[in-house]
Length: 480
Image (cartoon, rainbow, N blue to C red; front, side, top):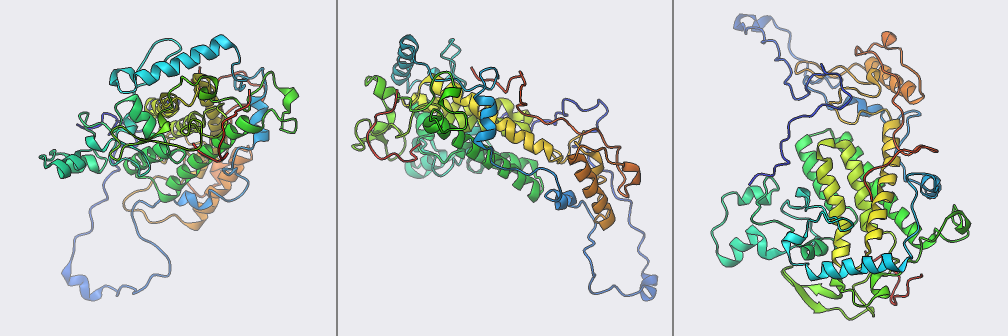
């Protein structure tokens, strides 16, 4: 069965004018070539065996990328903690990262939820929930593509290729399309239950599921290599910045030498005990290995003790929730048609750790808030660069820096045109309005520079949808 998220019709940018042409509309055909006259062959000058410069005609591959990293335009960089805490440590900011709950009634309710989840790990109907304070999104279609990522733990008993090989079953007619990631089959989902969701994210590289989804979307988008590399760089920076932000609050935020200092916060965020430390009735799924085929639990893990499946770093916030929300917010900026699928994916990654019994709900909810704040700061860098979000953006941030549309019969742009476009982009980055009349590159009039996106100091807007020391023994390493 084909994935419903595939091959969506183009949706114009929400701020685009109503007469904005659909970028999916085909370009006009080249004029017909001149009629071949064999009698003129003897009088035609011979072709030069070697051209001194590249001159192939046809749609050129994003020449504008040649000046994306030139001049004063901002470049992507890791979000520094000193910049992040201006928002997340300000109690008056909507991006404030609050201390973890210490009220016994709240903690007991969070523990009760984990015990309840453990009891329904194998019930597919329990994956989704609208119950207040127990909300869970359905599985994202972006998790259901085959083949799954290499380090994701999945149930091989439901893999259609494995079934055909191992049991001699007749293979499904669309098996190759499924294994190539071109189609999905609801009869053989990759993830079906809370247990499988927890196992999928048990030992993943941070952002593995989002990278898997991005590979799919870029295959469909067919963007230029520089533009694809830009998306990958932005995703990696968002994930890394989110993980370091989570580790800062897990370990160091309450220390007197942290950027805000312990006196600058109302309450604590660091060294929150894991659920098992608070109540040993919590069943930790990862205390057991997964079975060889990924269809159940295997041997009991022995070390480190107690609760060998509980990661050896503090509970608050959930690292998975933080980086998954950052990745989802970032990729939704590039692919707004897939925002719902990415919101599901972010919730799935964080809920996976609750299904495993190693995080409280507040770890997940506030981790998502923190991750989206980090993503908005990365998006602000992207917008300051004045590079169009997509190659077919109807309202580019700096129109004078965009070369005329490619035509099948056009050759490469002239150096003077590239230089004028590069100069226009630098002026846009400096907040100036380029003089398009003086530019040798034809194009629409330049617009005023767009305002930077992301948390602004003193702002009161929202980022996105978000609602005692650890004593575990064992090596303190980067277990996820």
